[in-house]
Amino acid sequence: MKEHRPKVGDILERTERIAGEIKKEIADIIRNTIKDPRLPGLVSVMGVRVTKDLRYAKVYISVYGNDREKQDAINALKHAAGFVRREIGNRIQLRYVPELLFIQDDSIEHGMHISSLIDKTMNPDE
Image 1 (cartoon, rainbow, N blue to C red):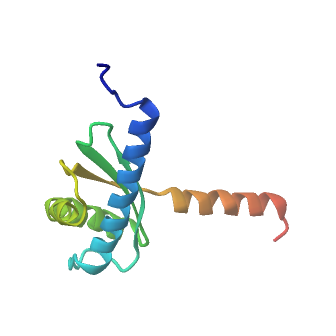
Image 2 (image 1 turned 45 degrees about the vertical axis):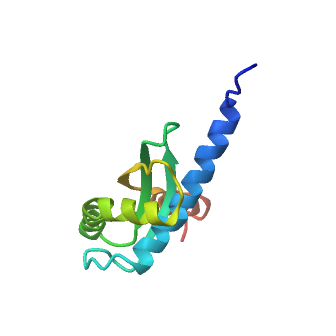
């Protein structure tokens, strides 16, 4: 009898599906459950990348505010990582809940900066 082994595409599809579920749940936990004063009102989960073995998940966070507020928010999330992981375990049926690594994502600000440079180039007299 031939052993069934998952294809690479199946594994990637599964990790992407799990990453999407984790992203949705983390956004909800940040918005409705965590009551840390270091978290400003506008914190967005930009993306989640899960390793193939589901041991680790990098959570990309965008925070609206100055540099100190951003760093405080990331520190608050790192401090709450165990709580968030436990909440995910309660909400999603997984054999193993990945360890969460919170990373600041500046892609929105970078995009706004690039957009302003393009505007300045296209309209130099304004």
